[in-house]
Length: 329
Ligand SMILES: [Zn+2]
Image 1: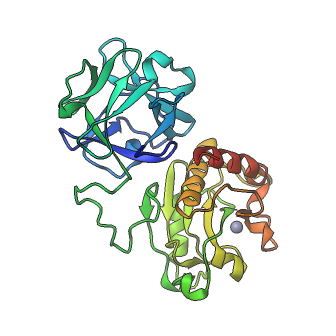
Image 2 (image 1 turned 135 degrees about the vertical axis):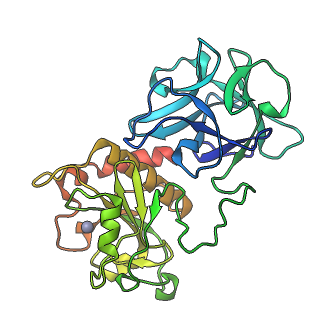
């Protein structure tokens, strides 16, 4: 089997070279039942990232995308046989269970057959329909690591290229607000440290703080609603934890609040985005199963501070559990 379960991929149609994409504006973090899935040029956007979720073995899967409140699966529009998404919890098996059948001659390429309806995901221009089997390239989809296609849109060499494909925007911190090369400091990544902003901030506003000369602080990431900012590369040491050794070990995340003292709440959407990013960092850095207080840490473990605040502190076990589920632990 060429793909792993519960891992984000891009799905590229062989005939058109375009990518499976859920339409609509999802900046508020919500996807709606029945939204159309089409083919589009590669955007490096979460609306084109799909996980294959095991469904009882035998190559049967559900193909899902996570945004905001939950998981949305590729689904069948009973009116016109178009491809749509539907919340996994309220979707019928008949409309979502897909047999991924490998195309013999092409690496990592599959026919995606809606098992119970005996129809295949098919490109029709830039539309996606479920249609009878033809065996043509319109029905072949290549499963790709995000950003690895040969369309030349992702060089990987740019120093402003984010470490995580989930990042909305890379805003480099001022050079004297972090330390270059974790390796040169003898550090290796072994944990993720959670912070809250003690403020309601956009990722741009947080980036502006880290760009300020003399700030003497930074973080690798910042999250606000569905947006993820990156400010310092994971290979460099961000100054976030108020503890040099911990900084040398940690990838750090600042989380925007949705309200103020004393609870310092965080919105559900921001929390879901945090779950997704934590899972991604853990997977790429081989952190294994996350354990609260071991490889998932928080600011007040290392410094005299109320950070990450009462609300987020009470959600850390949920964060660990959900990220572990995404990574298959
Ligand atoms: Zn903090």
